[in-house]
Length: 204
Ligand SMILES: [Zn+2]
Image 1: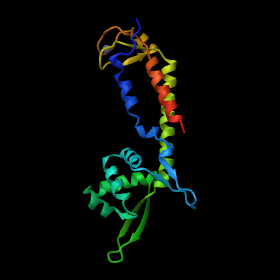
Image 2 (image 1 turned 90 degrees about the horizontal axis):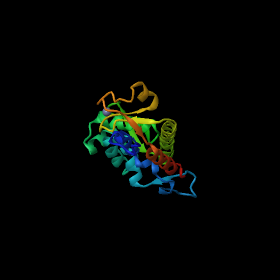
Image 3 (image 1 turned 45 degrees about the vertical axis):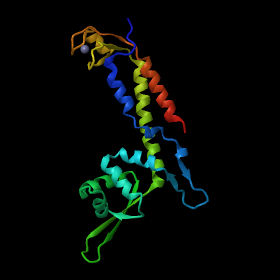
Image 4 (image 1 turned 180 degrees about the horizontal axis):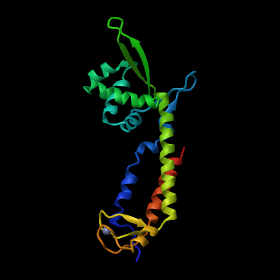
């Protein structure tokens, strides 16, 4: 008997859902202002928000503030968002790692302390998104290859794992968690979904 799609496969869906839809972002949503010397991509708010969301909740609020100003200090961002300064800095440095924000350090004339001035670099967003897309694509392709080159067996008990043939064979086709016999699991649906996702992401 062939199992088409058992409950045991629930974890596969998580993987599917785990891909932020930002990776299906189309470059048409970023319009290039031609004619200027510098290439400026106008990333719409929705895209910006989605990117920020990849960095966590604080990051979304930090971006909200950054996009409304030319340049701002981290202390001012902390004031406006009511997020603790160290968390604001954490979010900023994570953006900085991906060049999504630029940092300018100046010195307070009175106290002599450093002031950190931050600015959003929307033109770097496209590169960031393309990079992330590439990484997701690699993961999906590896996964697809794995799905295509293995046969899986499952007991169909919700929450139990599926096993590739070699492992299932070692286990004498008996689930180590619930002891029920394991049966062949058709993974055509997973292959189909992965293939579709890959094609979708590949569209320029
Ligand atoms: Zn089981």
